[in-house]
Length: 419
Image (cartoon, rainbow, N blue to C red; front, side):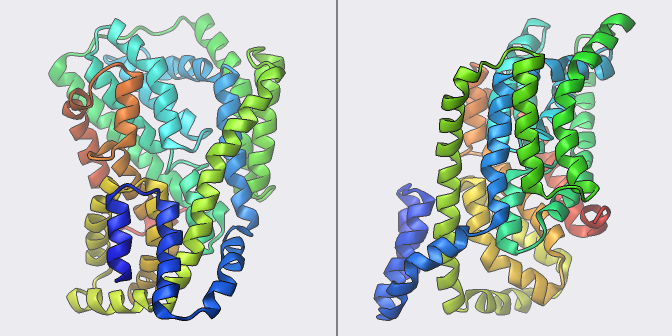
């Protein structure tokens, strides 16, 4: 009965955190094991009693401070220096700026919202189709969950009990591959549609643009450098990055008013609390999964089909593609990881880092696919266009992501190269 209750609540759009908690309570009641009620609250609290989870609100705070502090425009100008003169230069600028932003924000929906406001009107003004402008911006948002720091990697690292710093390192090479694939897509579309030719900035303008961008560049350097060289943990790096974002926005760019800090903290607290509560509820749900020996039962079913790790990951990719279309990416990672990770590690000897990169990228792909597709609707709203028009230009980027997922599934070294 419990699985049917779980599926029914998801179908009627009950928030995932509530679904997880209520399903666990229903299971305890159905099993008549009332002793479990006494441990329910303690188990929820234990699920969030993890130092690594502090990185989530701190990364969110960094993104909020960066948005308020005027760093987006500087990063776009810096991207213009490197690729602005190519045919279709503004599309490449969009992609490169998204890569820079991914190394700061760590959240795909937030990045899509910020970049859509900045890039879609500008691209349309220079002769690009509005649907393509919104599609390329939305696709660029998929870099956020792969290029560190990634909020979804933090959550996966906590659930999988693997070092979050190593999880960040596992995402660097796949993130760069994704950038190259998206650049290839832009090039091929540009050849077909004859994109407008860009103009290179004069040396003095380019120098000034890079100089103005340097303070903003301290943020990804503080995050990635601190982790890469073992100077700081991801949580400490996030704290340092949020302080740098505040000081740069306030003292250097002078666009961040300290009086707005309360509203920034308030937004960060509200958004972070929803994710933390989801993790707490997932901890109790994972308890139910263990009691029911669900991973072992599912492992027996899948291993009867194939004993090949690559085929297993392909099956998982197909399942997760469907799951991601219906459930938010973060919620899906919280739901799926306790069930599938033990199977991947114990039955197929797949590295938790490779598995994490594959499932996180796959599930976030659901941001751009109907019927849920929250990233698609954010891009449509911020870009003042329709979701259907975006989808017509988006499908080549989705194919590129599918190719990258197959590569990551077949070649473990792509995820493990830097660990």
